[in-house]
Image (cartoon, rainbow, N blue to C red):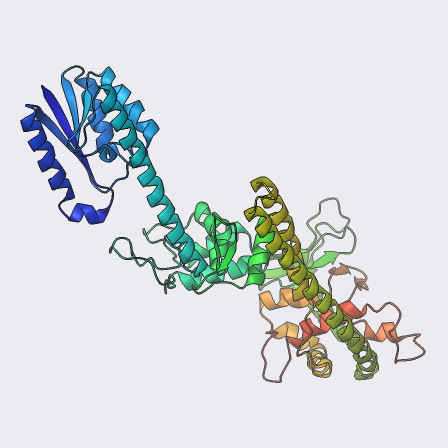
Length: 536
């Protein structure tokens, strides 16, 4: 009679001890007593008996394959206990049946199982007990993980950007939050903030990560899948939130978050296509042609491009329209002509100090009214958020007591979360704290009074922003007529808006106070001291 021995332990701690050797020793003694010749021993180290996948129980499947190849030759499959064979009643008897087809009988060293009615009954009870024990262990493990989550500790391996302390490998329980990875944490944090701003795409983030020399723990370079994990799968963790997948609740984690809750909401809405932020127009910068792509042809309204033309005296710089159907196509405009005319036009549009003084009084009055409106709207926003948070908590409670099915719970929860995201984004726009309208006026005026010098001293990137601030829709140029009257930002239009206004203490016709105050904020970011050499 020939047989094989199968031994298994389900944890690294048991592997380090004598469990495998002890099992084999008892199994060999059993075989000697029964006069069974041991032809093979299969040892499964640190694997579970929960399922039969090759990944989890490779040696066990090798043992079954050996019995198949030696059908009717291997008549005994020896284990120390039934729970070493399988931890699931259904799997136990399905595998038992397969072995019987190979002419192999299962033997337990410590338990009286067999083919007699009483032995079959005992085997069924033992298989059920093994399944019960496995379910009990699983429940205890789940309860332990839930307890750690409720404490704010992530019980699994943390996502990239945080250090894994390898507690399980060292035989320890995880009791502390995952610390940041000093090298990767700031890089991923910056990538998330960039995406949250709305001016970067997923491809931009991937390119930026590659430029920084970022690599994973395995030394691999960033890939699109990594960006997806960062922006979607791991996003809640990066915002300091731990999802309790059993209760559906969100717990505030003890680990250091990478981003704020507001940035998390922005990223989530951008990722899901529910919020499309304003993407600034970015053109290829060329310091030789600062007006390329910005000044528009007066005939066809297409942007001018720039190029050098070779002549007898060397190379000459020109702007021109590249639209073949345009009457101005092929008619070059010298670089100096277009740019000097542009500087002259800037000098003409600068508002005088008197205009600024008049509008300052009116806008201060408007601002006081706006402040009161902001505070009222903000208060309503905060109250609405609080109501939705209470409603969200009631939904969790109704899910726990069975009033909602899982599908109903997910649907109601998502609807409230999207409403919360919307309100929290609106709350960001309702902030007017620490905004000194008088100081902002002074800063903006210093900037606007020197438009020509600022444009000359600015870098190519700064010029791009400058041009868009002053001329939001671009500026038109015709070869014979020069620059045409273009739409200006409202601050620059102060002088013309005041014309015809009987009182300078009321809002001039055509002036959008919201837009005006927004532009003041933007201009105030670029206070222009005498020593400054550019816009920013």
